[in-house]
Length: 379
Image (cartoon, rainbow, N blue to C red):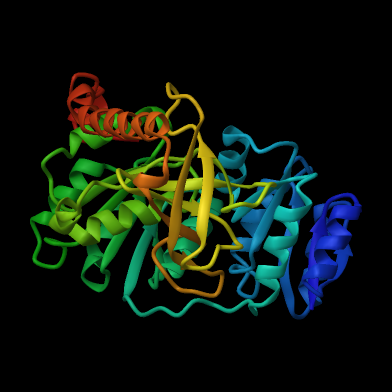
């Protein structure tokens, strides 16, 4: 079993590979790694320095490769910062670890070493992906496979409408397409009347496009600059429909660094949160903690809030070999009675603020919808 490593040789990497019983294969540039992967066998993970030249194009190639599209990718970064983690996950990595985080790196490599890389099973039917960038198409297709879909690809408005009858889901970019026109034609046809549509947009256009489809059932929006697995959250929302509103509290997409450790442990490991609700949160990690683990964790739940310490229990986990509509990681239920009243209040206030902001986004966006969207002439 091997680990392909696009990073300088270090003690932390060698020790982590030893813990996972993997043979490390070091490469100094992406072309050498691509050449080796062409004939390699039983590679359990890829470890990459996030600053290596050509990383994004390499990950795009990897996600389009029939053998390696599902291989877990860990990015090495200088420090556990939210912005850096978000950037590497948006580029196609599955997780990120600081260079000097020997514990976190060893945990992740040991976890992925236990799972042979396999193509996820498609059991939810076909999903149609339309995007002008082949790299983005590959990333979207990969995460849809993780969610159990069989992705196929389209380019034009006409192709989307014509193939809607064969699809359970459509994921499309606003670039080069007419979002309003596509949705109108789908809703006006028997084949696409109920087909959920998720629009991928530039960050600046997410609010206006979301406002454009306010009140239109079965249509969602996801910014392209967010971590790639965020689209799974939006897909789940679309497929759940009214069931989303039946939860005790809405889950909100929030990507922020979280330091966590089993209760009583001294040294934390860092991960990027995926979503949070009033009563808990989900943390991305290729080395998810086991259910029932008593957990201590620290995070800044919103940009305006201070760092807080909370306590809870791991109640759900998804390993790298699972097919599921969420990224690898674990869900935590907060034990309010064990938390500091001050920190618990900061958490609850932050959740309320984030929820209000999310609900107000539609209203604010209506006044800023640009003319091309109003005319249904995007691109």
